[in-house]
Length: 218
Length: 230
Image: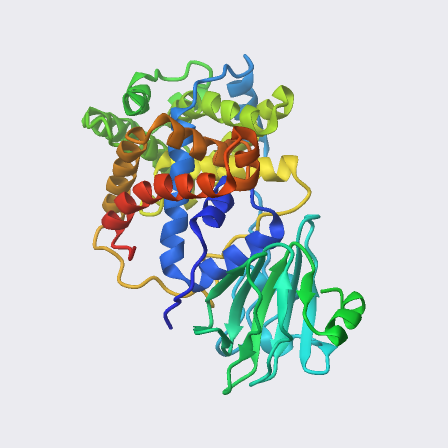
């Protein structure tokens, strides 16, 4: 499996800087789990942060800071290792950190009907800027034609999504914004499962989709 | 010049007078010797000494090495936290937590993945998100069986990483003042390209293309070193 559609430099640097909010960061981190090349790129972006830290002027620390830190090191016992959501038996489809966010692997998810031809699982995110959800489209199904009021990032986890001339497969990220209006179609061989994060409601073209939108929360 | 301070510092530290423990059973002369040897390699772009200090903390809970780390990094971490958080008392507290975490997580430091300053930066960054924000910064889990494996790693990845970071530092100093400022705004002021364009009074497209150009220069350097596709 080779990932062909990657995270942009702007997003990757914001993630390294720690300024990217949780919703977008979930897409970045899950993509990194599936894309060794972007892990290397991510380390490069971290290294820019390391260089900037190194190049900062020195601010005096409080006079007892070192003693205080050493005292706390002496007193505190080492923390036990954290607990993780275990992967299901067999090949794992959902990597961390997404698996913990949705509470299990792909075969353990409880899908809710979003429309007659789509299923979703809303994901709880603490930032006030983004909305995140898992989406599942049955094979061959076309997503209703829509535009965007803000940014949308879609990470494919299973199956494929065909959009214009491009095919997005497992690990690929599609970034769209206000300038894009599209009608992606799930590939013909298996259901398409993806993680979708937006910062504004979509603009659907069809009247039915627009009427349903307030009830669907997308 | 920056790199000179980087290598100069650990050679200057003295045995800590405040910790009898350091002179007792806990003290390892071998680690001090190893560090001196590393410090004697006077390559101005070599970030090894601080890395050696972290490794000495990991291997033998070496207090002298930790003090060297503290003297070098604590004032810089505090500057970083003041830039991103602006509250002096919180900055002091998060700086101390960062240094405690450096002690605790020293075993996890991997010179093949990051230089000492990059590793310390990531710890400070994560702790400041915990301190200043309500939301989280999700990360990969290095032990996750679902993690896609790295394809053919370089033979000496630690060396490759150090060299590539040294090249990065060189490339950073060659960027124009404007380009450096753009990167600093991205890193310190929690600024998106949109807010940078508002702050500088430049069109969004200009900010985006300048950023792409500046970051592209750095990536070209790193990409060549790490065998990355453009």
